Amino acid sequence: MYNDRVIDHFTNPRNVGAVENADGVGLVESESCGDRLQISIKVEAGKISDIRFKTFGCAAAIATSSMITELAKGMDIKSALSITNEDVAKALNGLPDGKQHCSNHAADALHAAIRDFQQRESRRE
Image 1 (cartoon, one colour):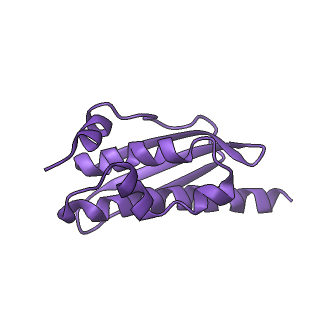
Image 2: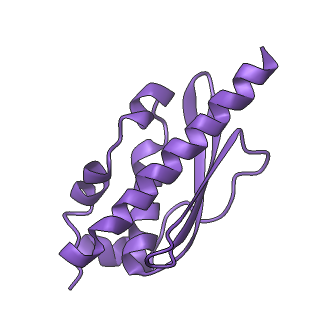
């Protein structure tokens, strides 16, 4: 059902946990499948210097969470906001049809963390 890349990110997830003193946190919950994903980021000089995730969900949810952290780490905020759900699935060499929705959670949580960061920054100004 899952390809080798998805299995690798599920069995050996990257960047698990939470960023200490995060600059932004995004949370996405799915009522339809029960998945829950939280992404926290640290931003330095306009770039994501650290990113971590905590996920409760299926293998695809964990794999997409791991992959989004790999894609976004080191990116500037504008570029990270342009990562799409399709980019996540493509980076994992695809997901089974019934699991495509899981990649949506990863991109949505990243975007929510960035929006949280931007809101915090605007309050400081």
